[in-house]
Length: 270
Image 1 (tube, one colour):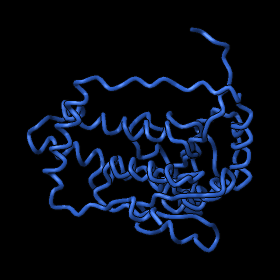
Image 2 (cartoon, helix red, strand yellow):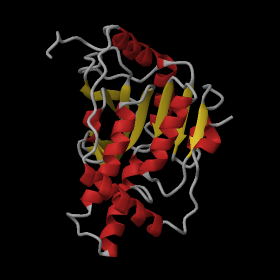
Image 3 (cartoon, helix red, strand yellow):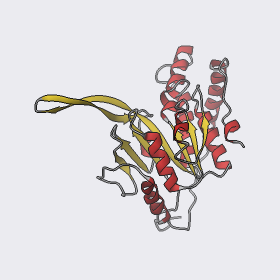
Image 4 (cartoon, one colour):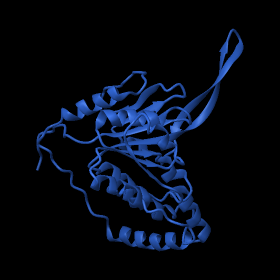
């Protein structure tokens, strides 16, 4: 049945994209501290997430290669079960372009002869969709960071090159992934953010440095939602997709059988 349209009280889904050195991790922690008290970080950046432990109170889980979607999903679910308010995924890029990520898996499927550049996506896409759904359906606020493709641009003054700046371009994610988020902030190498997508309308046309207050603003906007929550209806996967997932599972086990796996729950459990 139709019902009157209304904003539904929900959780934040934020993506911070920028080149290396733009301050994505620090900005994510600032936003997280404005959204909630208990913060969990899923770190794929080789331990860089620990660098801010003297400035913020948060728990961390380190993921190591292969960066399979399954590991991310398990970590998100474990953080939910332990009652965290905010989950930081730093970074989501590894699930797409890292060792053992979706692109790597797609290439291995092609090399194995189980598919070509086109048909191999029927194995990879369901995994990507599962990761997206775990983010969208999470009971926690989620802040994901993503590396941006970099371009170098010279700045001139009086006809002379004054300096060369790093410019962040599109985030290194599967095309269209950024549209799954409520807010996408592009952060420059000078730590200045601007929104490339903003369903809240809070940051349109603004240039600012992310802070705790930014998190407070987003939380306030979310709390303006209706308390009469209408839970979304999610459809089950079709049987043929389930079969594809089983076949892919067997392939992944064979491909990465010699790789030591990391159980994310072992770090979050206390």
